[in-house]
Image 1 (cartoon, rainbow, N blue to C red):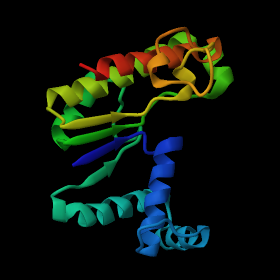
Image 2 (image 1 turned 135 degrees about the vertical axis):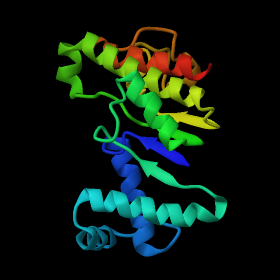
Image 3 (image 1 turned 45 degrees about the vertical axis):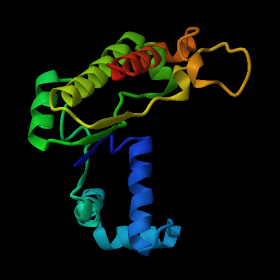
Image 4 (image 1 turned 60 degrees about the horizontal axis):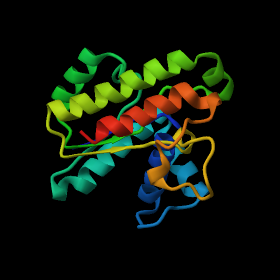
Length: 187
């Protein structure tokens, strides 16, 4: 079972959109905006789209014995360690794509640095701890370019430069929490 956190965020919702397009065309490449609009019109609400996506991918992956579940805030409070642990024990994913984060834009990040650090640290540590508790085979963690140092030698930025300097102050709380996710993920 593949569990995707953050399904209502920027990356998660785009991932769902691409998969919906694939389903709408029945092909191996994304369909047009019209294909997506037709499918969404047939399904109605985004919850129906989410349900349809899970059903479709579950059957598509069944031959491999896999299923896919997208979750958002309404499914589990990822800042609550007990809720996360119980949710993972109930769902028993074998693979996790962790996209969830507390985000709010530049102004919010600057005004509430400590809150963004605390919330994202809790989310990341709880998800990764739960993965470890139930022996998830593989966890993929989405990071962001804003976590890299503000000042670098040259561009493009190299992955190994992640911890060579502080992030830009405007994203400090979020960025430092995501950096710690990368550190924790290696355990």
